[in-house]
Image (cartoon, rainbow, N blue to C red):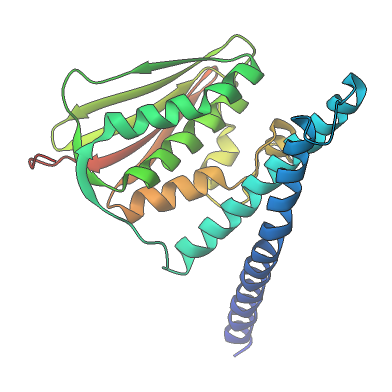
Length: 244
């Protein structure tokens, strides 16, 4: 009886925590959007010329507002996935096109971090039934995670390849690698290695968990391999014989 009560209490605690995060995230989104917009207008000179010291402070505020916005969006996405309310528009398509869009969108982040990006497309169409927007999100989460842990002037590789029955999207970096003790928890939400390294690197601790949930929601799978100076994350989807 005591064990059952403990399990019930733990489940209720998890439910209340998830409900709280969902409510807070929704309530934050509207004012945060207004803050981001106002800061962007100020930086653009909409209220008059901005002196260099003021511009620097506005840039810092804008960057942190953007970071908070990403956290809110991650929380909302995770809540949708866990509640089974995430919808997927699965269509047979070439994975390369969606991956290329994510690659282009993440370039400014790589430049800001002093990291080089390289894309290695497949030598043939790589067809699978996926949601293009969600696949972009999977790729972007893998790439941004790799950038955060790459050394300055390091290279992150986005690779697409096919083998028998599977289409693979892989992201490889040459950072420090994932600690052995942390690997079993790498896809857990809010998981952070070395007592908060993710925070130091600017992440939310949600990107990999969301990528895994999205990939699996599209009928795919995720895995990783890591060693000192090399980590590779991959998402695989059953290849389609249909043409888009």
